[in-house]
Image 1 (cartoon, helix red, strand yellow):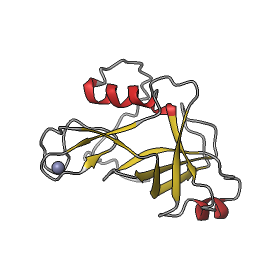
Image 2: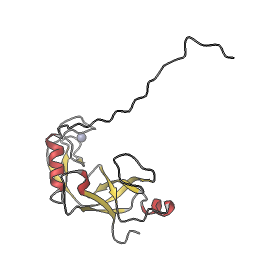
Image 3: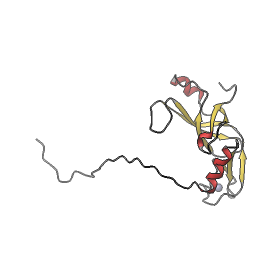
Length: 160
Ligand SMILES: [Zn+2]
């Protein structure tokens, strides 16, 4: 029989909160999402490092200054990183699905999006098709809602 201890270390109480809330997107994110409904990807240029930040951001994460100019970037790019999800998560699509960060033509930072147009049933084949450096194109919804669901990536023709 063990001896009870008086100093058992940190104690935790686990809870699950299911909250619904609405928050303001701000001018920059609102304009970025609005441009998606027009089939455009917008970034903002930093006046210090001159990088084009995509998705559009109000402040440069490197220089901590306000961005200035709006820049429309291209709809082709390359995959920088990716993941393929085979397990279900609440409020996300039914698996399998793929997410990737891709740097688009004219942008200096990568944009995250779902990747469609791939057979993800075989993990090894899916990972090969999403390799870093793989060219992708941005596709836009025919029925945009002004959300990040309005665009996704697909492998560029001839990349597989
Ligand atoms: Zn900067």
